[in-house]
Image (cartoon, rainbow, N blue to C red; front, side, top):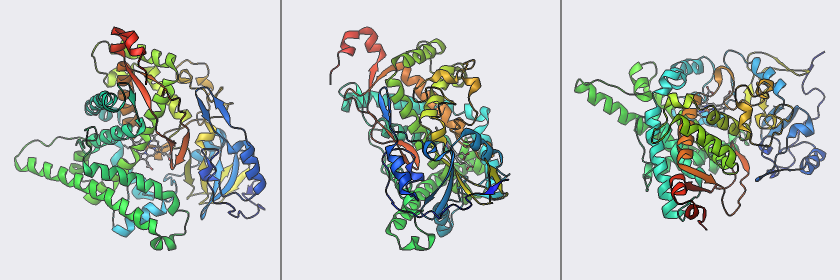
Length: 511
Ligand code: HEM
């Protein structure tokens, strides 16, 4: 007989609003009801990995695959096994809801702005996804962005050379994640707005800097705001900062949309052909109002920067520690693109190892380490329990991706797990690692993000051999809504051409 969860469970009382520093998942359960659980929690041993200390504390090992926790006013049911995650995902209705993002939605209501794909719900969410999807997800459209993105990659590679020379004693690139943030921002803007923002310049334009700062502020303040009931938000100083950050994001996006509209109008006045990619298409197709376009474009931008830049950072960090993996990738890239040939979409299709590297990076460091789900339509059965409608689930993807029953030797970076024909691949539970989500509400930018990551990584590895920071710094992941490096990632970039010509000089660089 199924029971309503959590029947007979004692009320959860928040006891200690402290962030546990022992593991990367604590943002979901640091309000525990029971001190004994907390003691257990901190006793749980850390795992040591070659080249890095991974402090991973799968709560599932302490509580089993299903447990309840409290985050501010939210009661959350955590789901931490591939089978149970699959069960939740397969019972999603036609109009899935993630979490209702009350703080993000409140801003839009306050300023009369439209919701985008992240914050919209119900039939209107479905309508905007059906308009936004084709040019973001259809391979024929996405492949047409390769030249634009390659232009940004060229500038990033030039910037790496400049950084090595000016601030890296000829070899180091410091704060790679910060640099890749600019790359991802420039890359997604070049696709969405068909405009270059100047992030790769030696001096980043002030407006762009403000935009980048506002994104960071908004993500920093978000988890604090949801800890408090909505009624007190207007009286909190950080609500004002949060509103100011959003105002700035919408202002910059509005400026870019306005510029594009004027550009289109100018061409129409001169009887010229109007050609363009994403924004031009949205503006010309008349399926959305300008306010709706603005709401969606702003959210696409937000979703498309930290995610991509963090993933590329982790993958370079991992490869720096694994010269053999790097060499295998280098061989693959030069066999598909010998000499000066720049990889395009068709070339990438012939690089399975490159794809496996990104896939394995996303298993070890899933940028979205946990994902909220609310079942609005029906009651839902998970394991032995029947949950009422509107239960807020938190799917613990991070914990599951380290489950040794699904991924043997789970702490090791093994891209070959993902190669076709790999014995292990056929055994993976399909919900063991779902870094882009699942179903009709899965990531809208997946194809563009993959294209950006493949083009950048293949070209960087073709030119540089990446080595760890000689200072031996280990970088751990932390959750700041997304899974981020806890401190700057600094790496050595050895120019392969110099190394081939003057191996001793290149190897003898001392810092
Ligand atoms: C490595 C890069 C990325 C990763 C790992 C990633 C991952 C995810 C995940 C896990 C979700 C939630 C899916 C779900 O709830 O089932 C999501 C949603 C979303 N992503 Fe991404 N993402 C990435 C890059 C991007 C980019 C570049 C864009 C924009 C161009 C983007 C736009 C979105 C949007 C708009 C949503 C919300 C979709 C909806 O609720 O309808 N993402 N992403």
